Image (cartoon, rainbow, N blue to C red; front, top):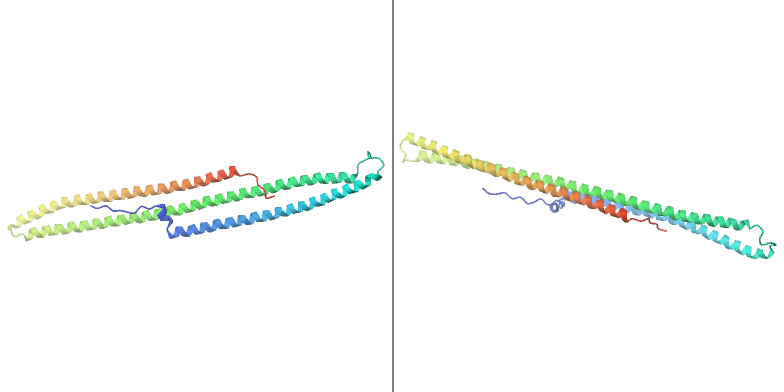
Length: 268
């Protein structure tokens, strides 16, 4: 009784399958498209924020010019003022209010743009995380399908080999029974017909006992092979499931670390 050997079905082997390579290309393309879309979003925000900053700079320059003009006017007009303690110049008060308002505007702009930029980065990071997590699931779901298909092929192959072996055994037993009967029938040393029939009967009984034992051993062999192959297949599925869980857990951990490490960001 010989043993059947099947190559182990590894994840590395499954990843080389044509259908998996096709999926990998699709997932890579999806990731590249998301990264491009995110870059366009960042460029658009950066452009708009830079426009807002430029506008604010123009306003700052105008306000600074007004302050300078007011200072020059106040210096030349001080020679003609009759009393220095008299009511302050309303123009100076207006400029002061404008300066205060402008400072508030600057702080508000910086705060808003920082929030906008940081929120966008967090949103994009979450989208990337969700895409990576989905892609991991897609990859391992396909790997599991390929694994189960390959395991079914191995089990079908084993059953076919065992069926062939059973058929060959039955044919060999039939030939032996016929040959033993023929030898007795052709044995000229046995003169009595009754003796020949007795010996044929004994031979058939002996062969039947032998044949039953051979078929039992073959059935036990088939059962052992199927149990061993089923056990190996179960282990392969468990390994794949653990690797998937580990990959998803690592992605979750990376995302949490990214969130904890993130700080408010701004491009201005």
